[in-house]
Image (cartoon, rainbow, N blue to C red; front, side, top):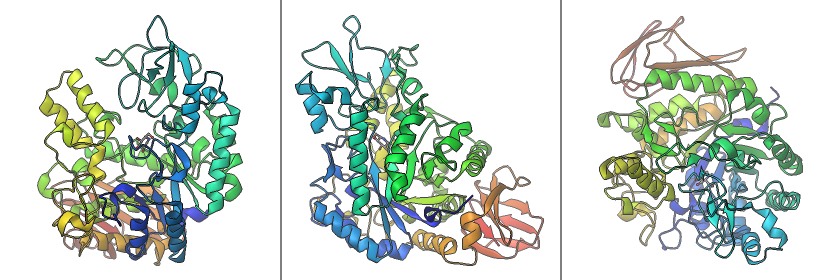
Length: 551
Ligand code: NOJ
């Protein structure tokens, strides 16, 4: 594969509302990000992805955009953004933005015009359908619960929203609408952003029959994913999008592409793929049967995780390039999700998980706070949650027959608020995040787990340095990945190799010591978590939840 500029980047994801508040209103902002660029530079990352900063009523924290080219006043002004861009550039840090083009806010000018005037051209920018015998057009359930259809007050007409009712879906069949999106994207690229993380992009094509399907839940509805996600014909939209925008700028694009089948990966990330890379969710969602129904919990095993992880890596390697991640603003913290034993949810285990994913083949993404070893936040009542999806999942669980305690448990395990808590910069009041009152409670552990003297942070620094600036950089970036199979069931092992070098990563995901025998000397340890491993020639005794990198 021909190498690309974005392959050796290390990306840091910022949730702006919770990163750093520069003006004491309890909400993080753009100036706050600028103030903390030195922290990011010191960590060693090279690119930041900022979750939506655009004008928005914020019912989905910015994934409901009412003006694609305005900055949400909560976050600052366009001048603040320009300053952030300039200051990042000085530090060789690139910026990518979140591109949300499957839907807008219902407060977007286009939608407001569409509502006001049936003859407006904007009506066809969205998806309107007439009802069937006083009912919605079909029985599809939206991702955030309830029907995907919302009725207009004075007409027998409904509009479609795959997410919340305040997030109407755009009608990608409308060429003029698509052209307006492309022009908007190009204006951001002209401004100097290096690319985009592209939200929910596999939802832009809907099956044109809009047919109902057999219900799959107590609400009588069926997940809309079967008819709205990765549907035939999407390739035309995605090719056109790329040709009219990203390709012209050599921009980096990271597709949020859940549900793409492995055999289709080449279409997404192959040589002429739609995107530079995609997030693969097959193993991220191992703890739940479906990323959107949190009450369907699984009893996953390390073997299953291992199988999914390598299946994913093989598919990414065969097709192109992946975007590797442990956490993001929709996922729980990895320590809480993957480590069942509370006593093992430690900084050392956070390092082990860091090592497990950071050296996979692809571009690593670090979500804010992951580099501190943060954990989930346990809330004792549903009204302590802000996230719309948490509230929906709570009531759906109860509707499915679970008790309130069980429903709360599911939400605590999976809530998107777990990773959205304000960033703990230090052990002082509100973790030094704000001088006011934070918009969302801090995690309980912020007095201990924060950015001061944090050994997980130092470990991430080392991993970044190894990948970016060491004798191992090339193999860790471009080398092929292969699973090493002859190891205990609960050990995950792989090699990265090129013509010159080979590096081995071993991770023990159990509470017991494990013996691993390699076919070569294991004495050259480059990095390890937990206490120093005991190695005799080719034999290694791994500590519980230990990670070791051997060169
Ligand atoms: C995926 C985003 O990551 C999530 O936070 C958002 O709620 C939905 N897309 C809708 O935009």
